Length: 477
Ligand SMILES: Cc1ncc(C[n+]2csc(CCOP(=O)(O)OP(=O)(O)O)c2C)c(N)n1
Ligand SMILES: [Mg+2]
Image (cartoon, rainbow, N blue to C red):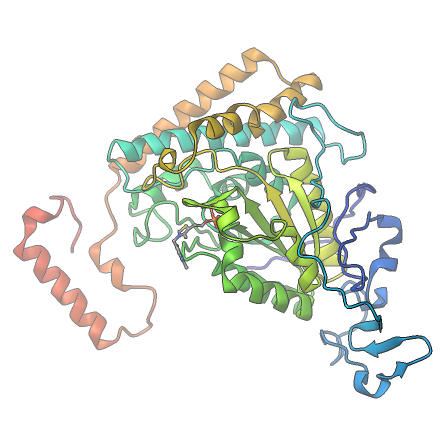
């Protein structure tokens, strides 16, 4: 992790006192959630605040001890009069009621939002972002939308082999990225290109990766959309679902040990939350008190599998509480809600050394990928409703128009300009030659093992024998 750069701590202000994170302090109250007030954060902590990784103490052998049994077995006792057992984790009350916990709550966990569907703030208790940031967020959302539309068309024209859009999830991408700091490490799934865009990965770099040309960071060895950039603290996309989630926990723990003023964030879908990796990661993060934000994009579908065929819990948010992870549900199509939630989550993750789970409710408004036709398994009206009535970009635009920061002429100008830029980078990327075929075998072993040497030899012989099966300009020497 040699690329971490330490930065001075930025002062955080303006936590939203109404933002509700599901707490972990009261194991007896499974169904309750509390409203969190930053002024009295310490009262929600399971341990004294002096445990915070921010305390200005010197390193001691106990500094990073994450589990504090504190002679728990010695102190266990039952007080029959009080009908209480002091059991590891806290006091357990006895009861004579033979009562099973219900599998559901009367009311589903509420969803935090700032803007209604018309872009009107529902309250004034949120961190007001300045005009410059708002403009940048809008511009990047439009860029992501435009890039997705044109790259998708390029795949349909056979110019690239594969593509995945983030249509419908632009607010999640851009607003969460805006609330993070560059030192925070990102462990993406594959529908978060906007986070990398926000961090400064250029349109040309996106195109180079999708076309797998010699300027691609991955040297053309991956399918399109498997972006990665050390420079932007963005780990390379791995489409094996949810493998990035435990990685983010390990990296967060190392940030904590190095006392970095940073956290990790990992993005995954509802489908990712149905894997074993998700559960192991949450549990590890809770026990090791790792500063990681689990950002679940619950977009209703894991390819053609709807969420009702994946789980019967109240979404993903309730699972955080089961693992002892503070959690919140947000409207993923409301950029201001996402921004506020990630900002507060980041603050808590770093200052209190704790994992946070965010479930963003949204909808995958595009096909799963270019290998999918979602009209085969979901009603077109459903897609249209989300595309039109709940479009996150339109909603944000309505808000900036209301603020007097945006106008119709600005809209057409920015869209034309970005469209031209995207077309230009595609033309450039297409012209650049492919990486040399020998690159397939580099960058893994210091000294290549004999089987790899044999495979390279065999590949080169095959190309020589069947030149008609390879492009004439295929670089082999
Ligand atoms: C371990 C593994 N299993 C299955 C797949 C096939 N697969 C690719 S994407 C996907 C669905 C993921 O859905 P979700 O996490 O909800 O993300 P979304 O595509 O909705 O953004 C599946 C099953 C895979 N890539 N990796
Ligand atoms: Mg999904």
